[in-house]
Image 1 (spheres, one colour):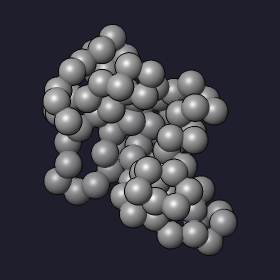
Image 2 (cartoon, rainbow, N blue to C red; image 1 turned 30 degrees about the horizontal axis):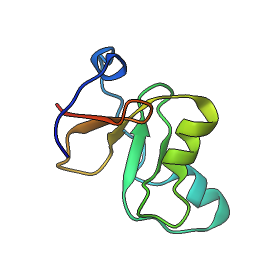
Image 3 (cartoon, helix red, strand yellow; image 1 turned 45 degrees about the vertical axis):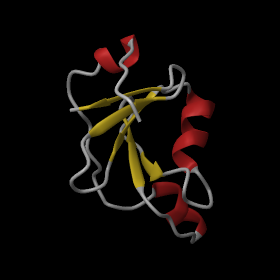
Image 4 (cartoon, helix red, strand yellow; image 1 turned 180 degrees about the vertical axis):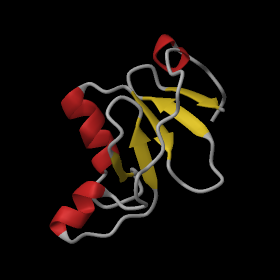
Length: 89
């Protein structure tokens, strides 16, 4: 991914990190996940698009919350759904 920022990403001043290293929605339904993402608006930690249920993307579309951060150890990036923008931090 090339780094492109947008007003949604630029508005993030304090990165939200996961409270637990689990997909909150997968836990509810007994499913597994690949990687985790944390919503930068509400702090929900959900699974990525490589996971069967794609909960992070579903959350973004259902709520309009635009920006996620990787919740994976060692990864430091943000992604904005509406602007298809990416930035490392």
